[in-house]
Image 1 (cartoon, rainbow, N blue to C red):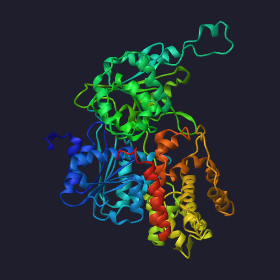
Image 2 (tube, helix red, strand yellow):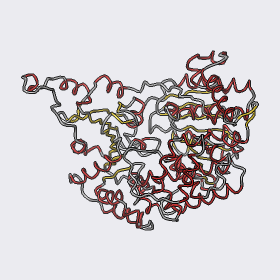
Image 3 (spheres, one colour):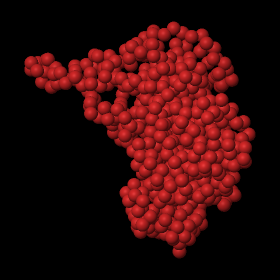
Image 4 (cartoon, rainbow, N blue to C red):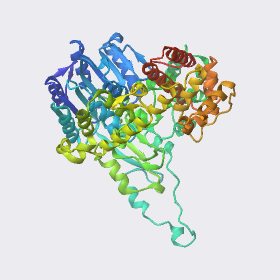
Length: 640
Protein backbone atom coordinates (compact mmCIF):
# COMPACT_ATOMS: atom_id res chain seq x y z
CA UNK A 1 0.00 0.00 0.00
CA UNK A 2 1.20 3.49 -0.86
CA UNK A 3 0.28 6.83 0.68
CA UNK A 4 1.72 10.14 -0.57
CA UNK A 5 4.14 8.15 -2.75
CA UNK A 6 5.47 6.31 0.31
CA UNK A 7 5.40 2.53 0.60
CA UNK A 8 3.79 1.87 3.95
CA UNK A 9 5.07 -0.53 6.59
CA UNK A 10 2.78 -3.33 7.70
CA UNK A 11 1.92 -1.66 11.03
CA UNK A 12 0.89 1.53 9.22
CA UNK A 13 -1.33 -0.47 6.87
CA UNK A 14 -2.96 -2.26 9.82
CA UNK A 15 -3.64 1.04 11.57
CA UNK A 16 -5.15 2.60 8.45
CA UNK A 17 -7.40 -0.42 7.91
CA UNK A 18 -8.62 -0.09 11.52
CA UNK A 19 -9.35 3.59 10.92
CA UNK A 20 -11.29 2.77 7.76
CA UNK A 21 -13.41 0.45 9.95
CA UNK A 22 -14.07 3.38 12.34
CA UNK A 23 -12.17 1.75 15.19
CA UNK A 24 -9.98 3.42 17.76
CA UNK A 25 -6.31 2.52 17.49
CA UNK A 26 -3.45 2.29 19.99
CA UNK A 27 -0.11 2.36 18.17
CA UNK A 28 3.08 1.41 20.00
CA UNK A 29 6.08 1.90 17.71
CA UNK A 30 9.63 3.24 18.11
CA UNK A 31 10.49 6.89 17.63
CA UNK A 32 11.08 7.71 13.98
CA UNK A 33 9.15 4.72 12.65
CA UNK A 34 6.39 6.79 11.05
CA UNK A 35 3.57 6.84 13.61
CA UNK A 36 2.59 10.39 12.74
CA UNK A 37 1.88 9.34 9.15
CA UNK A 38 -1.20 7.54 10.53
CA UNK A 39 -2.40 10.80 12.08
CA UNK A 40 -1.72 12.51 8.75
CA UNK A 41 -3.90 9.92 7.01
CA UNK A 42 -6.85 10.62 9.35
CA UNK A 43 -6.57 14.35 8.79
CA UNK A 44 -6.38 14.00 5.01
CA UNK A 45 -9.34 11.63 4.96
CA UNK A 46 -11.72 13.63 7.13
CA UNK A 47 -10.66 17.10 5.98
CA UNK A 48 -12.27 16.43 2.61
CA UNK A 49 -15.45 15.21 4.30
CA UNK A 50 -15.82 18.37 6.37
CA UNK A 51 -15.38 16.45 9.64
CA UNK A 52 -13.27 17.91 12.42
CA UNK A 53 -10.10 16.22 13.69
CA UNK A 54 -8.40 17.20 16.94
CA UNK A 55 -4.69 16.72 17.51
CA UNK A 56 -3.54 16.94 21.13
CA UNK A 57 0.00 17.27 22.46
CA UNK A 58 1.38 17.09 26.01
CA UNK A 59 3.39 20.33 25.84
CA UNK A 60 2.89 23.69 24.17
CA UNK A 61 6.18 23.45 22.28
CA UNK A 62 4.92 20.37 20.44
CA UNK A 63 1.53 22.00 19.81
CA UNK A 64 3.27 25.02 18.32
CA UNK A 65 5.50 22.88 16.12
CA UNK A 66 2.56 20.83 14.85
CA UNK A 67 0.69 24.04 14.08
CA UNK A 68 3.52 25.23 11.85
CA UNK A 69 3.89 21.81 10.20
CA UNK A 70 0.16 21.41 9.54
CA UNK A 71 -0.16 24.98 8.22
CA UNK A 72 2.47 24.14 5.59
CA UNK A 73 0.87 20.77 4.82
CA UNK A 74 -2.83 21.64 4.72
CA UNK A 75 -3.03 25.46 4.52
CA UNK A 76 -3.19 27.99 7.35
CA UNK A 77 -6.93 28.60 6.94
CA UNK A 78 -7.68 24.96 7.79
CA UNK A 79 -5.65 24.80 11.02
CA UNK A 80 -6.52 26.15 14.47
CA UNK A 81 -4.39 26.37 17.61
CA UNK A 82 -5.63 26.44 21.22
CA UNK A 83 -3.10 26.43 24.05
CA UNK A 84 -4.79 28.48 26.77
CA UNK A 85 -2.89 31.70 26.16
CA UNK A 86 -3.10 31.43 22.36
CA UNK A 87 -6.32 30.98 20.39
CA UNK A 88 -6.07 30.93 16.60
CA UNK A 89 -8.83 30.06 14.13
CA UNK A 90 -10.85 27.91 16.55
CA UNK A 91 -13.53 27.22 13.92
CA UNK A 92 -10.98 25.41 11.72
CA UNK A 93 -11.59 21.76 10.74
CA UNK A 94 -8.22 20.70 12.16
CA UNK A 95 -7.62 21.86 15.73
CA UNK A 96 -4.31 21.47 17.52
CA UNK A 97 -4.42 21.88 21.28
CA UNK A 98 -2.78 20.85 24.51
CA UNK A 99 -4.43 17.81 26.10
CA UNK A 100 -5.60 19.99 29.00
CA UNK A 101 -7.60 22.20 26.62
CA UNK A 102 -9.26 19.16 25.03
CA UNK A 103 -10.12 17.70 28.44
CA UNK A 104 -11.65 20.99 29.55
CA UNK A 105 -13.78 21.22 26.40
CA UNK A 106 -14.91 17.60 26.60
CA UNK A 107 -15.80 17.96 30.28
CA UNK A 108 -17.81 21.16 29.74
CA UNK A 109 -19.44 19.83 26.54
CA UNK A 110 -18.12 22.72 24.47
CA UNK A 111 -19.79 23.06 21.06
CA UNK A 112 -16.37 22.69 19.45
CA UNK A 113 -16.70 19.01 20.40
CA UNK A 114 -19.54 18.56 17.88
CA UNK A 115 -18.79 16.75 14.60
CA UNK A 116 -15.44 15.26 15.64
CA UNK A 117 -14.27 12.03 14.03
CA UNK A 118 -10.93 11.37 15.73
CA UNK A 119 -8.90 12.74 18.59
CA UNK A 120 -5.19 12.08 18.18
CA UNK A 121 -3.32 11.71 21.48
CA UNK A 122 0.36 12.13 20.72
CA UNK A 123 2.71 10.78 23.43
CA UNK A 124 -0.18 8.96 25.16
CA UNK A 125 2.26 7.53 27.71
CA UNK A 126 1.95 10.89 29.49
CA UNK A 127 -0.99 9.19 31.20
CA UNK A 128 1.81 7.94 33.48
CA UNK A 129 2.68 11.47 34.61
CA UNK A 130 2.05 11.79 38.36
CA UNK A 131 0.94 15.42 38.16
CA UNK A 132 -0.91 15.49 34.83
CA UNK A 133 -1.78 11.90 33.91
CA UNK A 134 -5.42 12.22 35.00
CA UNK A 135 -5.96 14.72 32.15
CA UNK A 136 -5.54 11.97 29.54
CA UNK A 137 -7.90 9.66 31.41
CA UNK A 138 -10.60 12.30 31.71
CA UNK A 139 -10.12 13.27 28.05
CA UNK A 140 -11.06 9.73 27.07
CA UNK A 141 -13.80 9.32 29.69
CA UNK A 142 -15.63 12.54 28.77
CA UNK A 143 -15.31 12.29 24.97
CA UNK A 144 -18.58 11.82 23.12
CA UNK A 145 -19.55 8.27 22.24
CA UNK A 146 -19.09 8.80 18.49
CA UNK A 147 -15.49 10.01 18.87
CA UNK A 148 -12.65 7.63 18.01
CA UNK A 149 -9.08 7.82 19.30
CA UNK A 150 -5.63 7.42 17.79
CA UNK A 151 -3.19 6.91 20.69
CA UNK A 152 0.51 7.15 19.77
CA UNK A 153 3.53 6.20 21.86
CA UNK A 154 7.02 4.80 21.39
CA UNK A 155 6.35 1.95 23.81
CA UNK A 156 3.31 0.80 25.78
CA UNK A 157 4.15 -2.58 27.38
CA UNK A 158 0.55 -2.99 28.55
CA UNK A 159 -1.09 -1.67 25.38
CA UNK A 160 -3.66 -4.48 25.38
CA UNK A 161 -4.82 -3.61 28.90
CA UNK A 162 -5.05 0.08 28.01
CA UNK A 163 -7.03 -0.64 24.84
CA UNK A 164 -9.31 -3.03 26.73
CA UNK A 165 -10.11 -0.23 29.21
CA UNK A 166 -11.08 2.18 26.41
CA UNK A 167 -13.14 -0.54 24.75
CA UNK A 168 -14.95 -1.29 28.01
CA UNK A 169 -15.96 2.29 28.81
CA UNK A 170 -16.56 3.61 25.27
CA UNK A 171 -18.26 0.49 23.85
CA UNK A 172 -16.47 0.38 20.51
CA UNK A 173 -13.64 -1.64 19.02
CA UNK A 174 -10.08 -0.60 19.92
CA UNK A 175 -7.27 -2.22 17.95
CA UNK A 176 -3.69 -2.49 19.20
CA UNK A 177 -0.89 -2.16 16.66
CA UNK A 178 2.57 -3.00 18.02
CA UNK A 179 5.69 -2.46 15.93
CA UNK A 180 8.92 -3.29 17.76
CA UNK A 181 11.51 -2.94 15.01
CA UNK A 182 13.34 0.34 14.67
CA UNK A 183 13.88 1.55 11.14
CA UNK A 184 17.41 2.48 12.24
CA UNK A 185 19.01 -0.01 14.69
CA UNK A 186 20.14 1.50 18.00
CA UNK A 187 23.49 0.73 19.60
CA UNK A 188 23.53 1.50 23.34
CA UNK A 189 26.90 2.10 24.97
CA UNK A 190 28.32 3.78 28.07
CA UNK A 191 31.16 6.19 28.75
CA UNK A 192 33.53 5.87 31.68
CA UNK A 193 36.29 8.35 32.50
CA UNK A 194 38.89 5.54 32.57
CA UNK A 195 37.59 3.06 30.01
CA UNK A 196 36.10 5.50 27.52
CA UNK A 197 33.26 4.05 25.43
CA UNK A 198 32.47 0.63 26.83
CA UNK A 199 29.72 -1.71 27.95
CA UNK A 200 27.86 -1.71 31.24
CA UNK A 201 29.49 -5.05 32.07
CA UNK A 202 32.91 -3.52 31.40
CA UNK A 203 32.29 -0.80 33.98
CA UNK A 204 30.98 -3.35 36.48
CA UNK A 205 34.20 -5.34 36.23
CA UNK A 206 36.48 -2.40 37.04
CA UNK A 207 34.13 -0.64 39.49
CA UNK A 208 34.49 -3.55 41.89
CA UNK A 209 38.31 -3.43 42.00
CA UNK A 210 39.37 -2.09 45.44
CA UNK A 211 41.37 1.12 45.73
CA UNK A 212 45.04 0.26 46.48
CA UNK A 213 45.62 3.09 48.98
CA UNK A 214 42.39 2.23 50.82
CA UNK A 215 43.45 -1.45 51.18
CA UNK A 216 46.88 -0.47 52.47
CA UNK A 217 45.39 1.77 55.14
CA UNK A 218 46.68 5.01 53.65
CA UNK A 219 43.12 6.40 53.48
CA UNK A 220 40.71 6.18 56.35
CA UNK A 221 37.70 6.58 54.10
CA UNK A 222 37.41 5.23 50.64
CA UNK A 223 37.08 7.99 48.07
CA UNK A 224 36.39 7.74 44.35
CA UNK A 225 39.53 6.96 42.39
CA UNK A 226 38.24 8.67 39.26
CA UNK A 227 36.76 12.05 38.52
CA UNK A 228 33.47 12.32 36.68
CA UNK A 229 33.56 11.62 32.92
CA UNK A 230 34.05 14.58 30.58
CA UNK A 231 31.50 15.48 27.91
CA UNK A 232 34.34 16.89 25.80
CA UNK A 233 36.24 13.59 25.98
CA UNK A 234 33.10 11.78 24.86
CA UNK A 235 32.56 14.15 21.91
CA UNK A 236 36.17 13.58 20.85
CA UNK A 237 35.55 9.84 20.71
CA UNK A 238 32.32 10.10 18.71
CA UNK A 239 33.31 12.79 16.19
CA UNK A 240 32.57 10.34 13.38
CA UNK A 241 29.03 9.84 14.65
CA UNK A 242 27.75 13.42 14.70
CA UNK A 243 25.34 15.21 14.78
CA UNK A 244 24.64 14.63 18.42
CA UNK A 245 21.84 15.56 20.81
CA UNK A 246 23.51 15.84 24.20
CA UNK A 247 20.81 15.64 26.89
CA UNK A 248 21.39 17.37 30.18
CA UNK A 249 18.85 17.87 32.96
CA UNK A 250 20.20 21.32 33.91
CA UNK A 251 19.66 24.40 31.75
CA UNK A 252 22.80 26.04 33.11
CA UNK A 253 24.88 22.96 32.33
CA UNK A 254 23.56 22.98 28.76
CA UNK A 255 24.92 26.50 28.30
CA UNK A 256 28.14 25.89 30.20
CA UNK A 257 28.83 22.69 28.26
CA UNK A 258 28.33 24.40 24.91
CA UNK A 259 30.83 27.09 25.87
CA UNK A 260 33.34 24.51 27.17
CA UNK A 261 33.11 22.52 23.95
CA UNK A 262 33.64 25.65 21.89
CA UNK A 263 36.78 26.46 23.93
CA UNK A 264 38.11 22.96 23.20
CA UNK A 265 38.55 23.92 19.51
CA UNK A 266 37.32 20.63 18.09
CA UNK A 267 35.41 22.18 15.15
CA UNK A 268 35.99 24.77 12.44
CA UNK A 269 33.65 27.72 12.02
CA UNK A 270 30.93 27.55 9.37
CA UNK A 271 30.09 30.86 7.62
CA UNK A 272 26.75 29.43 6.46
CA UNK A 273 25.57 29.36 10.09
CA UNK A 274 26.55 32.98 10.70
CA UNK A 275 24.75 34.05 7.54
CA UNK A 276 21.59 32.17 8.55
CA UNK A 277 21.64 33.68 12.05
CA UNK A 278 21.98 37.24 10.70
CA UNK A 279 19.05 36.76 8.35
CA UNK A 280 16.88 35.09 11.02
CA UNK A 281 17.39 37.87 13.55
CA UNK A 282 17.57 40.87 11.22
CA UNK A 283 14.04 42.02 12.09
CA UNK A 284 14.23 41.18 15.79
CA UNK A 285 14.59 43.90 18.39
CA UNK A 286 18.16 44.52 19.48
CA UNK A 287 17.35 43.54 23.08
CA UNK A 288 16.96 39.89 22.06
CA UNK A 289 20.49 39.83 20.65
CA UNK A 290 21.85 41.54 23.78
CA UNK A 291 20.56 38.91 26.23
CA UNK A 292 23.30 36.94 27.99
CA UNK A 293 22.02 33.63 26.58
CA UNK A 294 21.85 35.07 23.05
CA UNK A 295 25.38 36.47 23.25
CA UNK A 296 26.69 33.10 24.43
CA UNK A 297 24.84 31.27 21.66
CA UNK A 298 26.22 33.68 19.03
CA UNK A 299 29.71 32.66 20.16
CA UNK A 300 29.14 28.91 20.01
CA UNK A 301 26.88 28.65 16.95
CA UNK A 302 29.51 29.39 14.26
CA UNK A 303 31.27 26.20 15.40
CA UNK A 304 28.11 24.14 15.03
CA UNK A 305 27.62 24.01 18.82
CA UNK A 306 24.31 25.05 20.39
CA UNK A 307 22.05 24.75 23.42
CA UNK A 308 18.27 24.60 23.73
CA UNK A 309 15.98 24.78 26.76
CA UNK A 310 12.71 26.32 27.94
CA UNK A 311 14.44 29.33 29.47
CA UNK A 312 15.31 30.84 26.08
CA UNK A 313 13.42 33.36 23.97
CA UNK A 314 11.00 31.69 21.50
CA UNK A 315 12.79 33.04 18.43
CA UNK A 316 16.15 31.83 19.78
CA UNK A 317 14.76 28.32 20.32
CA UNK A 318 13.29 28.41 16.83
CA UNK A 319 16.63 29.53 15.39
CA UNK A 320 18.42 26.57 16.98
CA UNK A 321 15.71 24.14 15.82
CA UNK A 322 15.94 25.40 12.23
CA UNK A 323 19.74 25.15 12.17
CA UNK A 324 19.56 21.65 13.60
CA UNK A 325 16.93 20.68 11.03
CA UNK A 326 19.24 21.90 8.28
CA UNK A 327 22.04 19.66 9.56
CA UNK A 328 24.27 22.60 10.51
CA UNK A 329 24.54 21.79 14.24
CA UNK A 330 27.14 19.21 15.23
CA UNK A 331 26.40 19.10 18.95
CA UNK A 332 23.23 20.38 20.60
CA UNK A 333 23.11 20.43 24.40
CA UNK A 334 19.48 20.26 25.40
CA UNK A 335 17.04 19.41 28.16
CA UNK A 336 14.62 16.50 27.92
CA UNK A 337 11.74 18.57 26.51
CA UNK A 338 13.51 18.32 23.13
CA UNK A 339 12.78 14.57 23.24
CA UNK A 340 9.01 15.02 23.45
CA UNK A 341 7.50 14.73 20.01
CA UNK A 342 9.66 17.33 18.28
CA UNK A 343 10.78 15.52 15.15
CA UNK A 344 14.49 16.29 15.15
CA UNK A 345 16.50 13.09 15.28
CA UNK A 346 20.29 12.94 15.24
CA UNK A 347 22.77 10.19 14.51
CA UNK A 348 23.80 10.09 18.17
CA UNK A 349 22.19 10.79 21.53
CA UNK A 350 24.28 11.32 24.66
CA UNK A 351 23.20 11.43 28.30
CA UNK A 352 25.18 13.62 30.65
CA UNK A 353 23.77 11.40 33.40
CA UNK A 354 21.10 8.77 33.92
CA UNK A 355 20.04 10.58 37.09
CA UNK A 356 17.84 13.66 37.32
CA UNK A 357 16.34 15.94 39.93
CA UNK A 358 12.54 15.55 39.82
CA UNK A 359 11.73 18.55 41.99
CA UNK A 360 12.08 16.65 45.25
CA UNK A 361 14.97 14.16 44.93
CA UNK A 362 17.67 12.93 42.62
CA UNK A 363 16.63 9.66 41.01
CA UNK A 364 17.48 7.40 38.11
CA UNK A 365 15.47 7.81 34.94
CA UNK A 366 12.85 5.17 34.37
CA UNK A 367 13.04 3.01 31.25
CA UNK A 368 10.32 4.98 29.47
CA UNK A 369 12.25 8.24 29.95
CA UNK A 370 15.48 6.62 28.76
CA UNK A 371 14.00 5.15 25.60
CA UNK A 372 12.04 8.33 24.85
CA UNK A 373 15.36 10.19 24.71
CA UNK A 374 17.53 7.43 23.22
CA UNK A 375 14.92 6.94 20.52
CA UNK A 376 16.02 10.22 18.91
CA UNK A 377 19.21 8.52 17.72
CA UNK A 378 19.26 7.45 14.09
CA UNK A 379 17.85 9.39 11.14
CA UNK A 380 15.56 7.40 8.88
CA UNK A 381 16.89 7.26 5.34
CA UNK A 382 20.24 8.76 6.40
CA UNK A 383 21.87 6.60 9.07
CA UNK A 384 22.51 2.86 8.99
CA UNK A 385 22.44 2.85 12.80
CA UNK A 386 21.95 5.22 15.71
CA UNK A 387 24.06 5.50 18.84
CA UNK A 388 23.10 6.20 22.45
CA UNK A 389 25.91 6.90 24.92
CA UNK A 390 25.32 7.42 28.66
CA UNK A 391 28.07 8.97 30.78
CA UNK A 392 28.55 7.02 34.00
CA UNK A 393 29.97 8.52 37.16
CA UNK A 394 31.22 5.60 39.26
CA UNK A 395 30.10 7.36 42.44
CA UNK A 396 26.52 6.80 41.23
CA UNK A 397 27.14 3.45 39.59
CA UNK A 398 24.41 0.88 40.19
CA UNK A 399 24.69 -1.94 37.68
CA UNK A 400 21.28 -3.53 38.26
CA UNK A 401 19.43 -0.19 38.23
CA UNK A 402 21.12 1.00 35.02
CA UNK A 403 20.67 -2.40 33.37
CA UNK A 404 16.95 -2.27 34.13
CA UNK A 405 16.63 1.25 32.70
CA UNK A 406 18.54 0.70 29.47
CA UNK A 407 17.82 -2.93 28.59
CA UNK A 408 14.19 -2.74 27.49
CA UNK A 409 11.19 -0.57 28.29
CA UNK A 410 9.11 -2.81 30.52
CA UNK A 411 7.41 -0.08 32.53
CA UNK A 412 3.64 -0.29 32.00
CA UNK A 413 1.47 2.79 31.91
CA UNK A 414 -0.40 3.17 35.19
CA UNK A 415 -3.39 5.26 36.14
CA UNK A 416 -2.69 8.53 37.93
CA UNK A 417 -6.37 9.39 38.21
CA UNK A 418 -7.45 11.87 40.84
CA UNK A 419 -10.68 13.77 41.23
CA UNK A 420 -10.36 17.55 40.95
CA UNK A 421 -12.80 20.18 42.20
CA UNK A 422 -13.46 21.18 38.60
CA UNK A 423 -14.34 17.61 37.63
CA UNK A 424 -16.70 17.33 40.60
CA UNK A 425 -18.41 20.62 39.72
CA UNK A 426 -18.93 19.56 36.12
CA UNK A 427 -20.19 16.11 37.12
CA UNK A 428 -22.84 17.73 39.31
CA UNK A 429 -23.62 20.28 36.62
CA UNK A 430 -24.03 17.88 33.70
CA UNK A 431 -24.95 14.44 35.07
CA UNK A 432 -27.49 12.76 37.31
CA UNK A 433 -26.60 10.56 40.30
CA UNK A 434 -26.54 7.31 38.30
CA UNK A 435 -24.36 8.79 35.55
CA UNK A 436 -21.95 10.19 38.13
CA UNK A 437 -21.59 6.74 39.71
CA UNK A 438 -20.79 5.23 36.30
CA UNK A 439 -18.23 7.92 35.48
CA UNK A 440 -16.51 7.54 38.85
CA UNK A 441 -16.00 3.85 38.01
CA UNK A 442 -14.79 4.47 34.46
CA UNK A 443 -11.24 5.54 35.26
CA UNK A 444 -8.22 3.42 34.32
CA UNK A 445 -7.30 3.01 38.02
CA UNK A 446 -10.51 1.07 38.77
CA UNK A 447 -10.05 -1.01 35.62
CA UNK A 448 -6.45 -1.87 36.52
CA UNK A 449 -7.52 -2.87 40.02
CA UNK A 450 -10.64 -4.89 39.20
CA UNK A 451 -10.27 -5.78 35.51
CA UNK A 452 -13.41 -6.22 33.44
CA UNK A 453 -15.44 -6.51 36.64
CA UNK A 454 -14.76 -2.81 37.29
CA UNK A 455 -18.33 -1.79 36.41
CA UNK A 456 -19.73 -4.09 39.08
CA UNK A 457 -18.05 -2.11 41.86
CA UNK A 458 -20.67 -0.05 43.70
CA UNK A 459 -18.33 2.38 45.44
CA UNK A 460 -14.62 2.99 44.99
CA UNK A 461 -12.07 5.42 46.37
CA UNK A 462 -13.21 8.11 43.94
CA UNK A 463 -16.81 7.89 45.12
CA UNK A 464 -15.68 8.77 48.64
CA UNK A 465 -13.40 11.51 47.27
CA UNK A 466 -16.38 12.92 45.36
CA UNK A 467 -18.54 12.97 48.49
CA UNK A 468 -15.77 14.73 50.41
CA UNK A 469 -15.46 17.42 47.72
CA UNK A 470 -19.26 17.84 47.69
CA UNK A 471 -19.27 18.56 51.44
CA UNK A 472 -16.59 21.20 50.96
CA UNK A 473 -18.55 22.77 48.07
CA UNK A 474 -21.71 22.94 50.19
CA UNK A 475 -19.81 24.51 53.09
CA UNK A 476 -18.32 27.21 50.87
CA UNK A 477 -21.60 27.88 49.02
CA UNK A 478 -20.62 26.42 45.65
CA UNK A 479 -23.33 23.79 45.89
CA UNK A 480 -26.84 23.81 47.32
CA UNK A 481 -29.45 21.04 47.08
CA UNK A 482 -27.39 19.15 44.47
CA UNK A 483 -27.37 22.19 42.22
CA UNK A 484 -24.51 24.57 41.58
CA UNK A 485 -24.82 28.06 43.00
CA UNK A 486 -23.64 31.10 41.03
CA UNK A 487 -20.19 30.61 42.56
CA UNK A 488 -20.28 26.95 41.55
CA UNK A 489 -21.28 27.81 37.97
CA UNK A 490 -18.37 30.25 37.80
CA UNK A 491 -15.80 27.79 39.14
CA UNK A 492 -17.01 24.99 36.86
CA UNK A 493 -15.27 26.98 34.10
CA UNK A 494 -12.02 27.43 36.04
CA UNK A 495 -9.50 24.60 35.65
CA UNK A 496 -7.02 25.17 38.46
CA UNK A 497 -7.34 26.89 41.83
CA UNK A 498 -11.09 26.65 41.25
CA UNK A 499 -12.23 27.64 44.74
CA UNK A 500 -9.54 30.25 45.31
CA UNK A 501 -10.37 31.88 41.97
CA UNK A 502 -14.06 31.69 42.83
CA UNK A 503 -13.47 33.47 46.15
CA UNK A 504 -11.64 36.23 44.27
CA UNK A 505 -13.90 36.74 41.27
CA UNK A 506 -17.28 35.10 42.01
CA UNK A 507 -17.82 37.07 45.24
CA UNK A 508 -17.78 40.80 45.83
CA UNK A 509 -14.08 40.71 46.74
CA UNK A 510 -12.94 42.09 43.36
CA UNK A 511 -15.40 44.99 43.42
CA UNK A 512 -13.45 48.22 43.65
CA UNK A 513 -10.17 46.67 42.45
CA UNK A 514 -8.35 48.18 39.47
CA UNK A 515 -6.41 46.43 36.70
CA UNK A 516 -3.12 46.63 38.59
CA UNK A 517 -4.59 44.91 41.64
CA UNK A 518 -6.23 42.22 39.49
CA UNK A 519 -2.88 41.56 37.80
CA UNK A 520 -1.23 41.29 41.21
CA UNK A 521 -3.81 38.74 42.38
CA UNK A 522 -3.33 36.64 39.24
CA UNK A 523 0.45 36.92 39.58
CA UNK A 524 0.16 35.49 43.09
CA UNK A 525 -1.79 32.53 41.70
CA UNK A 526 0.56 31.85 38.77
CA UNK A 527 4.02 32.48 40.20
CA UNK A 528 5.93 29.29 41.05
CA UNK A 529 8.40 30.11 43.78
CA UNK A 530 11.95 28.83 43.29
CA UNK A 531 14.75 28.93 45.82
CA UNK A 532 17.29 30.65 43.57
CA UNK A 533 14.96 33.26 42.06
CA UNK A 534 15.88 36.81 43.03
CA UNK A 535 14.02 40.09 42.63
CA UNK A 536 16.16 43.22 42.57
CA UNK A 537 13.46 45.84 42.95
CA UNK A 538 10.05 46.23 44.59
CA UNK A 539 7.42 48.88 43.88
CA UNK A 540 5.43 49.94 46.93
CA UNK A 541 2.15 51.76 46.36
CA UNK A 542 -1.20 52.57 47.92
CA UNK A 543 -2.87 50.12 45.52
CA UNK A 544 -0.63 47.30 46.78
CA UNK A 545 -1.23 48.17 50.43
CA UNK A 546 -4.99 48.32 49.92
CA UNK A 547 -4.92 44.92 48.20
CA UNK A 548 -2.87 43.31 50.98
CA UNK A 549 -5.24 44.76 53.57
CA UNK A 550 -8.28 43.34 51.74
CA UNK A 551 -6.63 39.91 51.63
CA UNK A 552 -5.79 40.04 55.36
CA UNK A 553 -9.39 40.86 56.21
CA UNK A 554 -10.81 37.99 54.15
CA UNK A 555 -11.12 34.84 56.27
CA UNK A 556 -10.56 32.52 53.29
CA UNK A 557 -7.92 34.42 51.32
CA UNK A 558 -5.69 35.31 54.27
CA UNK A 559 -4.74 31.63 54.61
CA UNK A 560 -3.31 31.45 51.06
CA UNK A 561 0.52 31.43 51.26
CA UNK A 562 0.97 32.49 47.62
CA UNK A 563 -0.30 35.98 48.40
CA UNK A 564 2.66 36.48 50.74
CA UNK A 565 4.89 37.00 47.66
CA UNK A 566 3.04 40.08 46.41
CA UNK A 567 5.78 42.58 47.33
CA UNK A 568 8.33 40.64 45.30
CA UNK A 569 5.95 40.18 42.38
CA UNK A 570 5.64 43.93 41.90
CA UNK A 571 9.05 43.57 40.18
CA UNK A 572 7.21 41.76 37.37
CA UNK A 573 3.74 43.31 37.36
CA UNK A 574 4.43 47.01 38.00
CA UNK A 575 6.56 47.52 34.84
CA UNK A 576 4.02 45.54 32.77
CA UNK A 577 1.19 47.74 34.05
CA UNK A 578 3.20 50.83 33.11
CA UNK A 579 3.71 49.69 29.49
CA UNK A 580 7.29 48.47 29.88
CA UNK A 581 8.60 45.57 27.81
CA UNK A 582 9.75 42.19 28.99
CA UNK A 583 13.33 43.36 28.55
CA UNK A 584 12.76 46.09 31.15
CA UNK A 585 11.31 43.49 33.53
CA UNK A 586 14.30 41.18 33.06
CA UNK A 587 16.44 43.88 34.73
CA UNK A 588 14.39 43.38 37.92
CA UNK A 589 15.00 39.63 38.34
CA UNK A 590 17.35 36.76 37.59
CA UNK A 591 14.48 34.74 36.07
CA UNK A 592 15.36 33.35 32.67
CA UNK A 593 13.61 35.04 29.78
CA UNK A 594 11.70 31.89 28.81
CA UNK A 595 10.44 31.44 32.36
CA UNK A 596 9.29 35.04 32.50
CA UNK A 597 7.42 34.64 29.22
CA UNK A 598 5.81 31.46 30.56
CA UNK A 599 4.70 33.37 33.68
CA UNK A 600 2.93 36.02 31.60
CA UNK A 601 1.40 33.40 29.32
CA UNK A 602 -0.04 31.69 32.40
CA UNK A 603 -1.56 35.04 33.37
CA UNK A 604 -3.18 35.21 29.94
CA UNK A 605 -4.56 31.70 30.38
CA UNK A 606 -6.12 32.59 33.76
CA UNK A 607 -7.56 35.82 32.34
CA UNK A 608 -9.20 33.91 29.48
CA UNK A 609 -10.79 31.45 31.91
CA UNK A 610 -12.17 34.17 34.18
CA UNK A 611 -13.45 36.20 31.23
CA UNK A 612 -15.47 33.20 30.05
CA UNK A 613 -16.67 32.31 33.54
CA UNK A 614 -17.90 35.72 34.75
CA UNK A 615 -21.14 37.39 33.74
CA UNK A 616 -19.96 40.79 34.99
CA UNK A 617 -19.29 42.90 31.90
CA UNK A 618 -17.28 45.46 33.84
CA UNK A 619 -14.95 42.69 35.08
CA UNK A 620 -14.70 41.33 31.55
CA UNK A 621 -13.64 44.78 30.34
CA UNK A 622 -11.02 45.11 33.07
CA UNK A 623 -9.68 41.66 32.24
CA UNK A 624 -9.50 42.65 28.59
CA UNK A 625 -7.41 45.66 29.61
CA UNK A 626 -5.13 43.37 31.64
CA UNK A 627 -4.81 41.13 28.60
CA UNK A 628 -3.78 44.06 26.42
CA UNK A 629 -1.16 45.16 28.93
CA UNK A 630 0.43 41.70 28.91
CA UNK A 631 0.32 41.36 25.13
CA UNK A 632 1.97 44.76 24.86
CA UNK A 633 4.67 43.58 27.26
CA UNK A 634 5.27 40.47 25.10
CA UNK A 635 4.97 42.24 21.75
CA UNK A 636 8.58 41.72 20.65
CA UNK A 637 9.11 38.09 21.64
CA UNK A 638 6.44 35.73 20.26
CA UNK A 639 6.97 33.71 17.09
CA UNK A 640 3.58 31.92 16.83
